[in-house]
Length: 113
Image 1 (tube, rainbow, N blue to C red):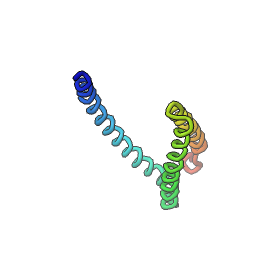
Image 2: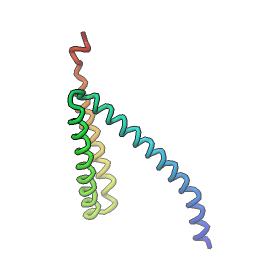
Image 3: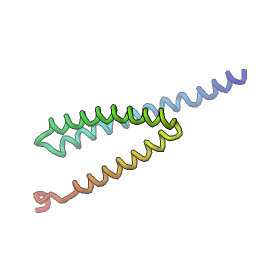
Image 4: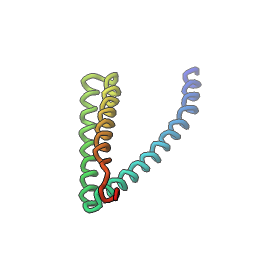
């Protein structure tokens, strides 16, 4: 009886919270997807099709390779290692993004006249 009551208490508290956070994540994902595509198209207007094709290809390969690599780390070392590993990869990705953004911030001579 106590197990049923605790399961009911957990489900009445966590299920709405899970639905709320899932909804927020879906909306944020949609905003990031649309904003990313707009920024990519504006980055190289002369070759929008090529930029979008490369972006889609990189996303597909990244998802496949990331899932395989995470599965391999999970299989070899277990759950205790997977989240710190993904956290380190996130930091490496942010540093790469920052460095590429820094290189892209060179002033455009046309706009500075």
